[in-house]
Amino acid sequence: MDGRMTLAPAPALSRPDAPGVPISLRGLGKRFGAAVAVDDISLDVPAGAFLVLLGPSGCGKSTTLRMLAGLEEPTSGTIALGDRVVADGGAGMHVPPGRRGIGMVFQGYALWPHMTVRQNIEWPLRVARWSAPERRARIAETLALVELEALAERHPAQLSGGQQQRVAIARTIAPRPSVLLFDEPLSNLDARLRVDLRAELMRVHRESGATSVYVTHDQGEALAMATHVAVMRDGRIEQLGTPQELLQEPATAFVAEFLGTPPAVLVPGRGEGESFVPDPGGALLAMYRPDAVRLAAADGGALDVDVLESTPLAGRLVTTVRHGDRRIAIVGEDAAHAAAVGAARARLVLPASPVRTFAREGAGL
Image (cartoon, rainbow, N blue to C red):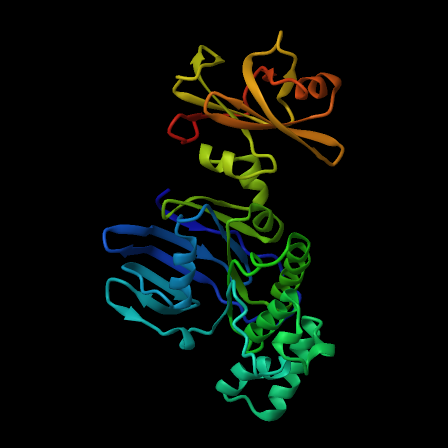
């Protein structure tokens, strides 16, 4: 999707001295030889926003983040942090990472093993030449923010994975960067700890006031944490919006199938007047909500499907079926649905009209 994309202003921050700055990308591109990793992205992120770059592996999200951090140089386009251009691919201008006023949290914790928690947090402050009284005050403030005061004198080997990641976050925010970048920081943790730490990250973001950009392939993280989400595909932004906008009004079939638990149901077919007719070879894709499609016994319904699996979820059943080459997940709880789950074959009953229709190649109509 071409063109400049602008986010709505971020929600009001909890502290008046918020240091966040707006981020502006113009025509940003990155090539590795003949391979295009990022393709002509233009985007405005307001100060204090929490933007998540979301997409499958290889979509360009991590490369975009690395260009923001200064770890990769763009092939084309510009990056501006506030009123300062920090990279210009056409002019060959590149401000190094240490001079961008950013902090970055990686997937790995990258802590100094011979230093205590306190010393790890103090290190970037020493590099930035903060005075000793300033360092002591900021370390105490940061330890309290990530709730690590009791562990300040421990070494990384004495900490759990979640505690180590909190130290990495504390070390990153200690110098008060204007921009925080997160490269899948929770992917090494177990599921429950990820949920706990993402709540902490949201709190840290709000209290630090920094503009945050977060990369993940986990849509649960994206939808729970972000003020805005940029769904990426093949080096481009497929759609940009709030989590609610993306779920309720997907711009493309890719976004509709990528987001949601379970995602929207897409059925191929063709138009006949005002009606949609399911047809495996049709030029259209009709979108239905997964809780609006019913599973019925094999003698009724519109589509023959193979029942693959069913999982209880919040008192209902999420059932995955296969129709042709498409996997479809639906939500149901009635007796007919439960009876059909026990069979190898069943039928899908579709609502009278789809929520939305896409061209077969994916664009909304």
